[in-house]
Length: 166
Length: 195
Image (cartoon, rainbow over all chains, first blue to last red; front, side, top):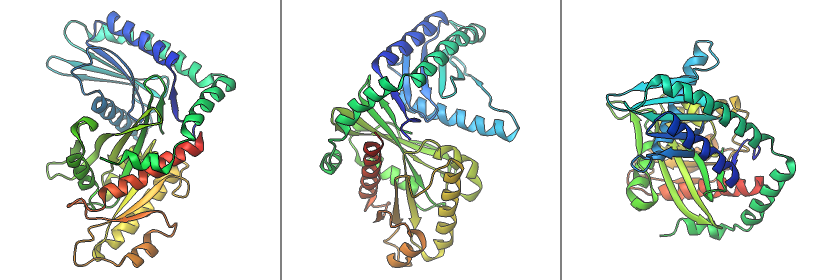
């Protein structure tokens, strides 16, 4: 199942972060997050320090999953965009590259129209990066796996027991 | 579906607590939340009804520590146990790296336990998964109550696969961490095997 597991290497992380940073600036947003559909935060940009990003990632994934369930119920493939309007802050949530969720947090300094426009381009960039990540040559994937294996193969039951001490 | 982040040197895994309504899934998470260091846990999120029945899920992110240079994080989820929330259960099971089945040991809940376990198997099968291959442990909860089914009978009814099992009383915390540890071990070993 490792093929379907998500592995993020430094180079990919940098490129994804750069796309998010540009989206955040171009859309005049407060913060931007990229989350995988299982609820793990992949990358973020902007004013993220005051936000509980782990909870945000999990709730967003739950939200998208529930909306996806609704879509299927109605015979739709998915509802690919969600918009939550608050008094001051708003959320624009969209599915990108099939396995990712892009969340844009913005306030009155921006507008829904601007966010939608900028998200469109960023979504294409992210989709492309995801495809590249997935299509990475067997050799590269093998190298990464080998490095991981080397580190992980040494894990003993004792290491795992130690995680639960203290 | 584990998420291995080389850039941040993190391993993230998802564990799902499954079981019939009122068996103590949320109570497990609440006990863990109450006992771990604030620095190693995130917020406990409960999407529940006004009567504190789980509506969608409970979520607790937990940092277990570092293993061979990788920060190991477990995201603990519960499903809503009530029968009619099946659509939500399917969504939460997606991407699970391991499942903890919490059984209610009381005699009158045996039927619900069996029904819920069958429901788990059916929902996993929809994702081409099975309890034979997925890291899976059982927790026999509420062992402190007077009207409990003997362990041997629970084993016959619920654990023909001989998965690791733990006796517990989630309200007082007995067996809660043992169960979590048992499941985490299986998940990490599975990850090791896969690589």
